Image (cartoon, rainbow, N blue to C red; front, top):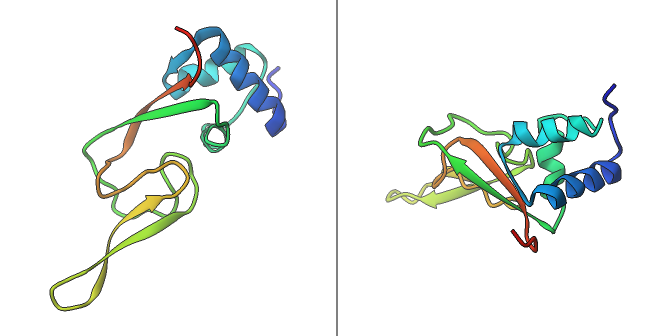
Length: 124
């Protein structure tokens, strides 16, 4: 049976998985590796927690499709800041959204479709 660990236990398990492999491409593969260790986490909780670990580098590949409206960051689920621009009439207009935690920017990125996780100081 897979248990729901505390944040500290999940961080410990995530670091153990990455120490063994060095890099994992794909969020589903990572969650399956955790499940083999009897540790479970939702994808949303996993992404939120992974950005709080300074030893892990996350790279994201994006599609060219854009979102219609965003409430939370599609990468890490944190709060987004609005990107505004002044048009020729002098009115402020929202042109996109950015995340201060993971660096997602809706004006330059599309929808995320694959994640790669790796230890920053791991010898491959």
